[in-house]
Length: 116
Image 1 (cartoon, rainbow, N blue to C red):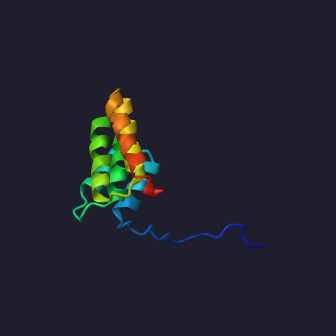
Image 2 (image 1 turned 90 degrees about the vertical axis):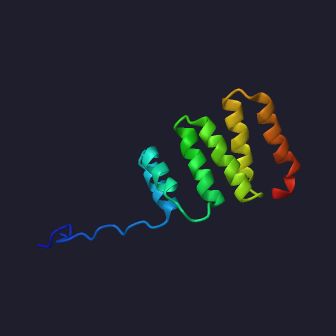
Image 3 (image 1 turned 180 degrees about the vertical axis):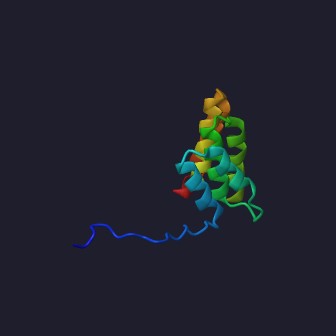
C-alpha cells in the first residue's frame, strides 16, 4: 500500500526576496506595516514612484496622514504621470479636513487629464 502523502525529508527554504517593493508587499500582506516601512526606508537607490506610493499607502494605513502626504507628493515629483499619487494627496488633505488643499490637489488632476 502506498502512502497518500509524500514525505519530505527536507524542505528548501523560500528564496530571499531581494526586491524591496516585493518584500514590503509581503510584509504588508501579513499585517506587518512597520516592518514594511523599515524595508522601504532602507532603499538607497533613486526613489521610484512605486516606492513612494507604497510608502505613502503604509503610512496612511498606520494613520500617519501627514507623512503619507509627503510620500505621495514625492511620488508626484518622481514621476509627473502618477495619477494615483495625486488622488492620494487629495485624500490625505480630505482626512486632515484641509478642504481647499484637497480641492487644489484634485484640480491638479483635472488639469493633467492627458494622463488618462
